[in-house]
Image (cartoon, one colour):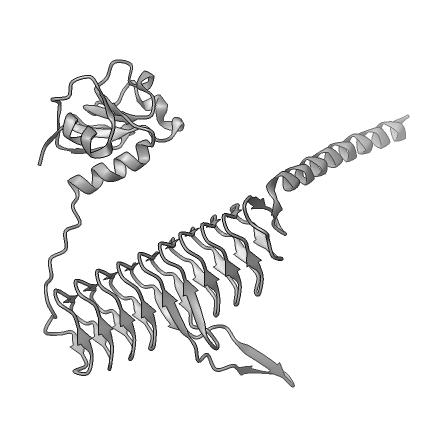
Length: 337
């Protein structure tokens, strides 16, 4: 499949620089460019590869970066490249039906154009919407509802009584609806608290591989629509996550925490139970949220605090460390005298 540069420019609403008739047959990395492909400069750290890449065209945010090369100028090169990739690698869905070695309870309702691959198990009274893909060895517990246009990849486990909206993507080996970590201690015994609630996943949510979302003790654990979870994310029982949040790898959110809309939580950050994080918060990597945050700004550190305040504390700590070194040197010199 080949497209002319002018066709791709039209797709991404960009301005052409150079020859609009250049033929593009694929996409390559800027540092490993190939003839006949298009690449992009989205991060200035990769600008050093511009002179040597042999890609036939480059998507950039500034025409000066091209230095006479053929390319497309757009406001957001990364967004443009996402659109171009979708054009070359179409994700068109074709139903394969129900595999003979899948186990589907007769009481379940299966929509049109559904794929259920080998080894999948669908328990009683499950409802699966149209054009949904269920990968090999997926387990879906009784009374679970899965919307239309979803992709549930291999080895995912979905417990009973879970609700999943439309166009949800769940990557391999994730688990939804297992018991929350609920125990009460009496006389040295840790007694299990029954986890009787459910999990509600909104439309267009994506859940990364090996992630776990616990069912609520009572009520619901909620992941709001269009929120995206990276791999290895753990969401505790009764957590409420708002819409359009981005939560990256190895984040842990403890029980009953509430995350507002449009929040970003970076890698390995942690959130303690029962706190609230306001909308449009950014939690920096490795931060620990130990109290509620109002939102609308970036937070960093342990405990997490507004990042400007954290930087001041770091600076003071560094100054004190330097002063201590100087003091120790003065003491050492005076002892010699």
